[in-house]
Image 1 (cartoon, rainbow, N blue to C red):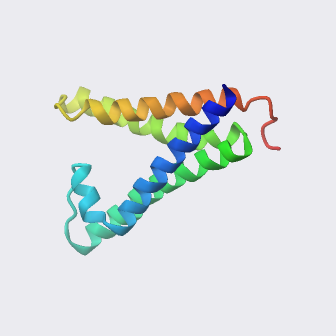
Image 2 (cartoon, rainbow, N blue to C red):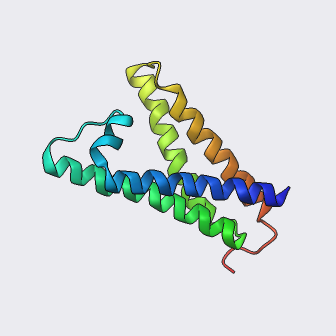
Image 3 (cartoon, rainbow, N blue to C red):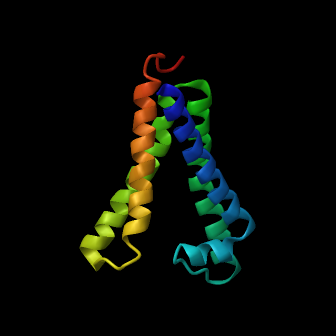
Length: 129
C-alpha cells in the first residue's frame, strides 16, 4: 500500500512539473486553458514566472518527499494547493459558480488527499532527518 501511495505522490509531482514547464514554454496557450489573459509582454512574464513557480515548486517538493519517503516536504504542496482551493471557494462565495468551477477544485482536492496520504505513509521517518 505504501508503494501505491508513493507512486500516487510521484504522479502528483510529475503532473505539476509538466504544468509548470508548460507555463514556462507556452505561457499564452496555458493561460488560456486556465482562463487567464496576459496583457502584453509583462503579462506573459508574470504568467510565465508565477504559474511556473507555483507548479514547479509544488511538483518538486512532492517528488522529493516521495523519492525520500519523507512527510515534511509534502507540507509545501499541501499548503499551496489548499490555499488555491480556498481561493476557489472564496470566488464561488463572492462571485458565484460557473460550470468550469468544479473540475479544478476536484483536481486540487484529490492532490491534497494524495499528499496527505503520503504524509501518513511516510510518517514513520522522523521529520527533519
